[in-house]
Image (cartoon, rainbow, N blue to C red; front, side):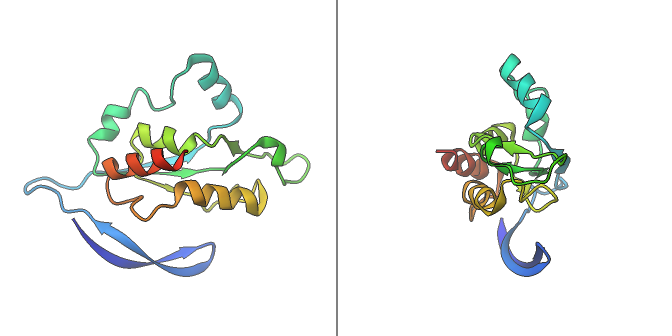
Length: 153
């Protein structure tokens, strides 16, 4: 695997970040999996508490076949009591165990800039960044699992 610098647009501001360039074994293409919005509050949280299961339990083995798995984390890490949204606006707050849950599922990268990124104000955004933004986050699934799991503590 080699690394290169890429330009990103983060919250409308250009930024430069290191990005892994995946090189698959010869004769095989690169497998990239993208999910849609990852929502772990509301009824999803109720169901996870009731069953003790992850939303990805049935597809974790499929994720393991990918070189890279990414999804959009639609919310912030922190308590729902810290929501800073207007009346009638949904607030998506996730527990601090979320990065470890995503790592166990096999996610390599989560995108965090979206319309619910600031649901818990700047403190929620900072907490999410502290727990999810790691230098080696998108290098590989196995590295990501270690980094995300370590960040959950």
